[in-house]
Image (cartoon, rainbow, N blue to C red; front, side, top):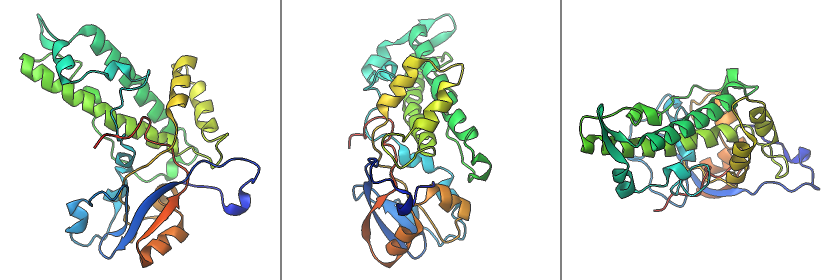
Length: 268
């Protein structure tokens, strides 16, 4: 992701806060970045040397996975159900077992909105043709909450899996927003929200909810570097000078300003 160089920074305008992360250079896997000293995935610690790091950034949106339950805001309140509450929303119809129709419609409306926001921000980005290829996750509806099941237990399982998928979709939306960031606090999302405000499906109320959700961000994702393309480094990597420093020793460093996973961090 591009950021302004120090010479371009206006000292009279407040910058977005920086995010401290840990990074070190792994001889086989390249640059590894972690947050809160979390353990590294076994595939990085024990995996064979990699000649191609495409798989390290094709799912980079997982680094934007919200680190707390996402149902604590107005926009996501339709997901504010624990497992017991979801079970109470499973009803029997002539077509089988499934979510209460009102709740099903609410989840569907939220999913449609989030997917539209994500696709708009990615597809209409001025540099979209140069983006590295992403591997998109299954959407909540892919887990089946929009259909009825043969049994109550199956319907509950489907509903819980579908709800979990909203967290991954939220991370993907946050990643899409981060691609539009500027360095300045007073204009960080101006371009992104200007684009979204022009869409016929975006209401002023929904846009206001999105704006209220974006604060600061702590992405947690690993990055390989050896064979990463210039395009991948351009959009998905920390500044080159910081990468070079991380190669030499374990360091704490600041990333360019990024938004916090759309809602607050996941509880441990």
